[in-house]
Image (cartoon, rainbow, N blue to C red; front, side):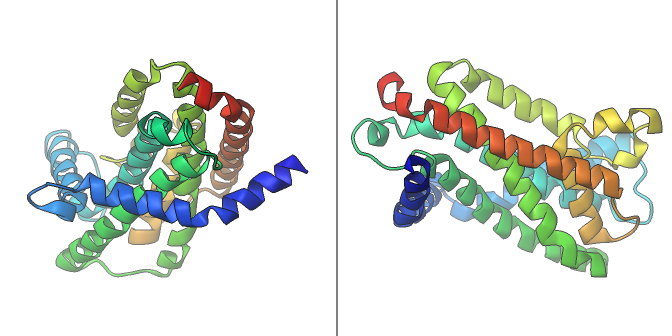
Length: 262
């Protein structure tokens, strides 16, 4: 009964969710010279660096696809995950004043951080379409599957964000761990290169990173070619569902202590 009431409260406080997401968007680009353009410049600069390092220096294969498009099509889901994971992870600490003063379902706070990162993602996605037009990349039927991999990226970011946000309330060490995880994850995920370069015997272990299948699927939706390996996609989907379910369970089990510990 109490649990049902909690989910009703989440819906009842939906206006607060929208307010927090909109506030975060405004604060993120407040008093910046170029404002929301940073949502385009950051992934664009990262793409240029990775293109030079992996495409020109390491000479990683890209098949018939332009290397900048290959990188940028993977950069978008990764940048979304990294931003949503980092922001939602520190969201409870950043909103400690609200938590200690009024009641509302605390889960609204990390969820609003994910929505904020999704807005950045949509802005950057427009640049990807422009980049595809510049290089003459055709849109394939696989493009229709794109929402599936966007939802998987959202699920991964939300589940991981719920875990880390609730852990950070108790263990402030996570504020140092998160940037390391994000930086390390960028280089071990197939962002600057295709996952086809990974030896076959290591592919299963490599796929334990749920963002590998998400990035591969997103890239396939954009560029076409060989479809994602279905068993790997099923395995990743199950893994993400477990991350979300366990994240919600742990968040709910610790939520009552947030006001006292924060």
